[in-house]
Length: 365
Image 1 (spheres, rainbow, N blue to C red):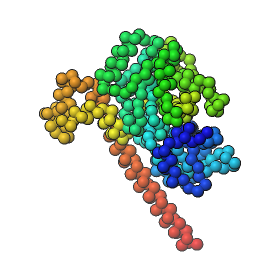
Image 2 (cartoon, helix red, strand yellow):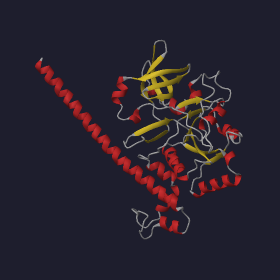
Image 3 (spheres, one colour):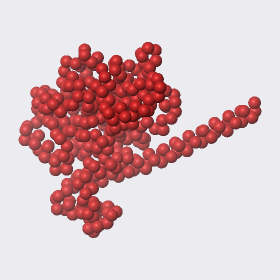
Image 4 (cartoon, rainbow, N blue to C red):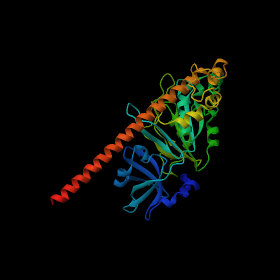
């Protein structure tokens, strides 16, 4: 298998000058805590980070994630490898880590298209969809919306859901499908381009793994991939049960690549100003017409945003979510910046203390 079959396009080939003698390129296909699986021309093998890599990494965002291209050295006749560098990312998916701590979690890298999956039956939520769109557009990835479980609602109800999406100013392509009847599956297949990388984003139980099994078809013996990914039983409400436990890059029979990943309960915003502006472009354009450059879009005179809301040209809920996401992203960004400053200051203190200790040890000897 050539490397271009797993996504090595001309953009990444131009980065090959970062390879040192004795190093080769490979792509990360799975990450399980501090263990990595990479794929090269001959197949998959385990890899680990070098001590130098770990020492130089300033944050978790610098560590490899699924989809990354990495510079590796092979050991023991190519049975495993060490990872020395990560090539620059053409695109990425990131979020604030779950919980109260403020840090960045890299989810995937070098994705061309993100399929954002929502169930028409129990999971449909416009505000959550906007969060996913912010994450995707921040990482310079094309979004496509997949609405699953259409067999559980009427055609009229489906049209109403799509209408709500359009009223919220969301113009991304929509594909409706059912893993039960097979409706929409061929439309997804037709959109897959060989050598391009796709990913599935969505909550647990919306049918992502079942969809992957349909798309993988009878591959497996040919690619070395597991043919049937484990799925959970469906509850009485039509909600599937979470089964995916790690992110992994799969090769489909259409020769496209697909990243499967667990459902995400939290989609925390951290430094997502570009993604928010792009996802809420209508509000950004209206704000340019406000009388004051620093308009807070509350009670200021000459506010073009408030005028559009009053004239029902802009959805109030959409605007409130824009404010919420902006404040959340800015707050976490300030907290993250403060944390990085403290970490660097502590690192300098440790280095200074170690140098002073080494100097005393040399003097005493």
